[in-house]
Length: 285
Ligand SMILES: [Zn+2]
Image 1 (cartoon, protein in one colour):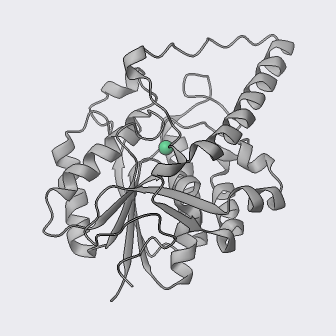
Image 2 (image 1 turned 120 degrees about the horizontal axis):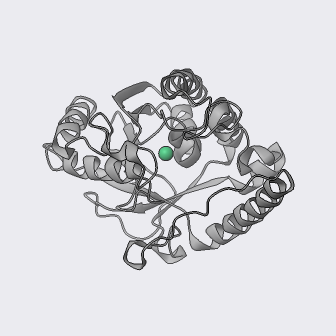
């Protein structure tokens, strides 16, 4: 059977960070791979780490730069087909950009779902990956990518195996420690330069959720150790966004050791799989 894989991602760079290893491994297995990127990423950082609310941030320039960065990453990951839906980045939750009628967040779910469904009908991927209902970390574009994908699945004439990308709690604890250390160091560096950043807005109790997944709930753990260099290079291609990230601060060796597995939670199960699989196409080959 000709195998096709498709992931729906929110921004340029998400394909690399959450599925970069999987894409490269599947390409090496001659599986057809499709990437749907929903937004242009206008409200990522401008070069030099300039934030969207700072002087020198031009949303359209950022989008243009990220378009070429995504092209590079797609080539590195051997992705067969890239579809850009071209919605405007919605910014973080609560930002005024959420209400821009061209933003992905303000786009009627059914409109975008019809477009994704058309791609699904054309490609007929057996396996699909997107985010869970929290968009993994609460970003409106990631939540919308989830909603649009779920609606698209209801419009098509077959049932693929759907997975949400996930990070097991055991791994998440290690990442969190790293992030928190980096945030502390950044705050200290800012303070030394006299920069005061506004505190992150408090998240209401009912809006809180866990980013990590209990280890026992992971249903696919994919060995991507043969593809960690490609994943590293694909992330590096998104230089404007991840140039200063914790990934890029790792040496290649460290990255290889830390990033050798990608994890997923199975959501639909037309092949009647049970337990944890090590092949995302389990049931299909
Ligand atoms: Zn994103």
